[in-house]
Image: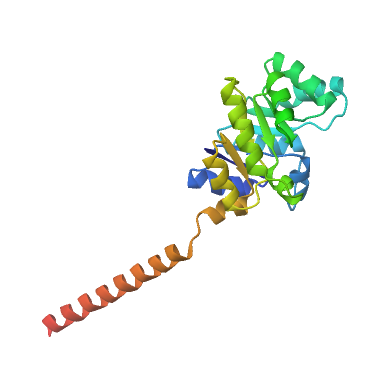
Length: 228
């Protein structure tokens, strides 16, 4: 399963790229607005991100009619060859997905909360569908189960659309989505960083270092005895 970062923070992206685990980025105007001290336009930030990570970058449309979405999608897609256009799933969005995909622009259909929505988006030509698992969990539904249903459905009918698990809240979401076959999970940076952590790893490193320091001290003591 590939890992994307769900962020507009360039420093977070640089760190994930340095770790070798950032296959792409998903972002939107809300994430852009959250970045402290954001300067420049959303377009400029997306282009900056494209210079950091060599992979797909999802940038979201905000228009609310099909014609306006198509026009906006064409503009966003022109920002960089790696840009994927995010379009929410509703009636206007579905029409736009069909038209934009037919024009050769990759679409990430966002705000997916049902297998029916994912099927419609896939049949309309979307390159990606993004089920929001954390938000489903918030209302007592099982987001990972939805991911599994969508993956199975797309596989059964050999549809090329890929599943991006979104609204990922914790590391258990990541491993669960990987287990059910999600193609991609897009993570906030704190979740990605948490995947590195385990108390036994920290304890093991501390033990190794203490043993090494003790061995070095004994070696120095022995050398000093010989010298005397």
